[in-house]
Length: 275
Ligand SMILES: *[C@@H]1O[C@H](CO)[C@@H](O)[C@H](O)[C@H]1NC(C)=O
Image (cartoon, rainbow, N blue to C red; front, side):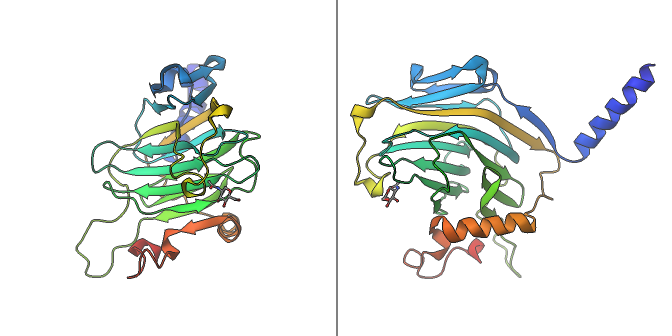
């Protein structure tokens, strides 16, 4: 009797561990710490939802209790509605220390009806300068949308509602190359961070449009935070042809800045991973 019940369970465990993942559907009460802004960050619905607010005095933020070295992270976010100009909602992975690694999503607010900018970046050993920016193909303030980072030992895939928007690859070592200092986060564990703050000196139209404090407090909402970790580091995960097409569609229609194409900034040619 015991055997009969135990076998399928064991089989399931083996199946799970040989491939991916330990999926942790988080409860904000158990899995994050509010790190600044005091009562401006609120956990609601028994830990199912988290709200960040920004007023004239301060924004606020939270971080995951757990750290990850390679992971798939999903978060559903509903961004600040209405006139959100000057506000920034950030959702990113980061390690600590001066030579930290970081994988960023930042959402730059705008006047009502004008598009948010979704800003992405990848830091390695304290160095960033790998920005890509996008408009979204929907209004991100009307409902929750899923923003994901799949971070493996050889590539980072940023996705929105399952549509890949950016693939950042660890570049191959070139023939005869001894330098092992690739721009890739590969050895430092990261926490998940999120925050809402005022950045009206640069966020909206480069700082031209300021925050309208008569509209405060500004509110961004978070739910269904998921973190999956893997023993196999997801190294086998690659885009299929359908996802590849979607990525091209986003790049062709919604990408507004790509550091790889910025010849003014990199007159000597872009960083090597752009090739
Ligand atoms: C805000 O809207 C203006 C006008 O459409 C646009 O140029 C800008 O990229 C938008 N986003 C931000 C964050 O400035």
